[in-house]
Length: 429
Ligand code: SF4
Ligand code: SF4
Image (cartoon, rainbow, N blue to C red):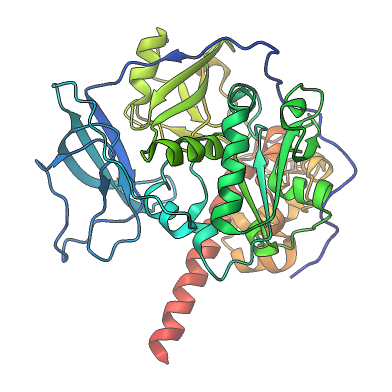
């Protein structure tokens, strides 16, 4: 594997947005009649499922497919399961979606949890809280996490969701930090805030990292390098070097959950309309994007594009039924006229992608290997796994080659290939 210096001195020329000093309250999207929940486990028709169509559920009820399942979702409403089916994501991975039909009788009954002061107990009930706390990582014993970084910063361009939560819920975030310390025993809890913002003063009792407003400084790999002096090797995740990142919203949600012994479901989002108009909203996890656009009076035409995330590294969805998920921060609508077209033109070796890459990846060569499906070579010789997925290379590519998509696909295929090799080796033992 090549060991190139990881980051260049050249800073790309995009800035993150900063939250207003006195932000307006979000618009609350009405609770829809049907909520769509994703469950990160495929249906196995050979097994007897614990849940089925027609089952009634309570607000806060934990739902899993099988006795031995470790994945679960939590129902945000009392009602009944009106559908359970296969969900196929963009990478071809299958999981499951459930539709919960809300009970028409307004009930305020919510299941309370027997939350104990240990991380395993939190992981049993709170994984799907708004902000999606990384409890699975923290609860895994073989992770030697020694530092938790709470992020009051946005990794997406154009959005200010995390900063808004940080500015409005600073007390809950500090309580969340204390709870995390108590549950995990990890003494070092730091907080990342944007430079040039007044969020820092709300956390004067904590160790604060001020991140640059230059994209992509808020990516975990860059925070590790700039503030903890840790360089990730190719293919490493922050937890491999002992650091766990948790969003401000997740930390605040945990504090509220421990206080009330119940799960929260209201997700903060920034919705960016076709003209760049920004809407700050809260919506219940499971609300379809179509319901949000309707409430905001945003009309979506056939060829408009709905992007979850920012223009650089967001993922397009092709259905208005796509649900709000607990880790979703930004929804961007691109007018069909302004969609950046991709092409099958050849690379002209202009070098722009290489110059702008913050991870020093030789993108122009790498993409040739990815186009030829040579994923292992791409990883071994051309730094596929050093890519932090910022999307800048695709943005500047003069030939409009879908570099980012090639890289994402390359990583996915490489991981699938490695998994199948391990399975084969295990079967042959
Ligand atoms: S997405 Fe492109 S520019 Fe960004 S780190 Fe990866 S290769 Fe470099
Ligand atoms: S920016 Fe596009 S055209 Fe230029 S070297 Fe990179 S891949 Fe080739």
